[in-house]
Length: 588
Image 1 (cartoon, rainbow, N blue to C red):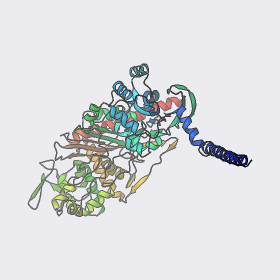
Image 2: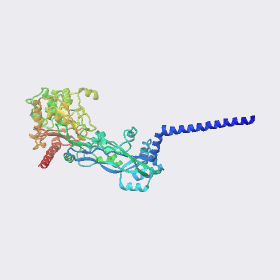
Image 3: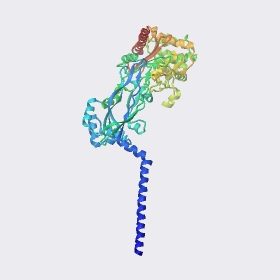
Image 4: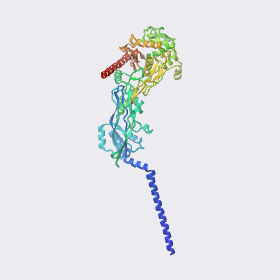
C-alpha cells in the first residue's frame, strides 16, 4: 500500500512537470507568434512582399525648353533602357559577362552600379540607356535572369538652334551622388547651361511601378504604381532664328556673339564657338569622342561669352572718356595732338595709326579710336579713378546671368599689383589701362553690359536667359544704377555715332538702322590680335545691343567684327518685321 501511494505521488509530480513543460512551450509559441505577427508583422509582411514584387523606376520627363516664340529647342523622346534586379540575378558572373558583351560595357562598370544600390536589391538598377532595338532583340532572346528592358524618356536637342552653351546638356548620376542619396542610379542631371542652372525645376519627380513576379523573377502582373511628376517647362529669351543667324556668322571662327535687349536684360542670342553636340550625352557616349572633346586645344566646352577673360581693348575707351568728363578733367572743347607717337619720360607709345590723327577732341578720339588721346586722358584721370569707373561700368564683378561658369574678371589698381605682382604701379600701366589693356580682364558679356549702362543713362538690367518658368514670367531686374550727367552721356554717345556714321573705325557697321558703336583690335600675347565690336541700334532709341568678339583673328575690329554685328542687328530687325507682318495678317 505504501509503495503504491509513493508511486502515485511520483506519477502526479511527473504529470505536473510534463504539464508545466507543455504549458510553457505553448506560452513560448504563443508569444513567438505574437512577436512575429503583431510586433514584427509589418516587417515580415514587407519582406514577403519584396520577395514577390519588383520596383521599377518610372523616371520623370524633364521639362521642355522653348525659345521666346514657342519653338521647341529641347524635348524628350522614348528610348530603351536595360536594368538589372539584384534579387533576381542568378549566376551573377555569367549574366554580367553576357550583358557586358551585348551592351559593349566593362564588367567592372556594371558591378560598380550594382554595388552602389546593394541595400535595395528588389529595385531595378539602370545599367545602360538608349540601347538600339537590335540589341534589345538579342537580350530578349538570351532570356538572362534579372535583366529588364524598359522604355524611358531621353533628352533630345532638336537642332532648331544648336545653342550648346546656352542649353547645356544632361548626364547620368554618378556613384557619389547616389551614395549621398541625392539621386538614384540612372537619373538624368543637368551638367551645364540652362539644364544645370534650372535642374531642380526641369527634373520633376520620379515615380515607380511595382510588378508581381514568381519565384524565378518572371513578371506576373502589375501590383501598383506611383506616377511621376513631369518637370516644369522653361521658355527662353533666345530667338532661335537670330541664334541661327549668329551661328552661321561665327562658324569657323573662335569667339562669341551676344545680342540682347539693353532695356530689360533679355538675351536674344548667345553663341560661343567652337562648341559640341549636346545629344551625345543623352545617348551612347563614345569614349574616344569624349576624350577628344575634353582634351581639345579648341576648348569646345568653354562658354567664351561668360567664361572667357580678355582685355577689352578700345571698347573700354568709353569708360576712360566718361571718367574724364565726369571728373571735369576734360570737356568737348579740349584737344590733344596725335602725331602717331607719344613719349612719356623715356618710353614711347604708338597710336594704331602710325602717321597720327592730328588734333582730336573727345568725340573725334572716340570716333577714330585715337590711342594717343586716351594715353594722355588716362594720365589725367589716374589709375584709382580709372579703376573706380571700371567697377561703376560693371567690370570686375559677375553680371548675374542665369548660366553657370560666369567669371568676374580683373580690375587692376596699385594695391592689386602690389598684392599679386609684388611691384609698384607705373604711369605706363595707367597708359595701357586707359585703352583697355594692361592687366584689365573682362568677359565679352561684361564688355557689352558696359555699353548697356551707357545706353540706359546709367542703369543696368541683369542679363537673363530664361523668360518664363511654367506660366510665370521672369521680371526685369535693375542691378546697377550710376549717376552720369546727361551732357557727358551725350558727348560719349556722339563719339560712338561718329565711329560708325562719319567714317570712323566702325564704318563697316553703317546701316539704315543707324547703328552706333566702337571697335577694338586687341593685342594678344599668345598670338594674333583679337577683334571686337560693340554696337547698338537705333541710335536714338536702342532696341538691341550686340558684341562680336573673335580670338586671334589677326584682323581689326573694324574689318572682322563690325560687319558681323551689323549683320546681327539687321537680322534682328528683319525677323521683327516678318513677325509683325505675320501677326498683322492673323489679325486681319
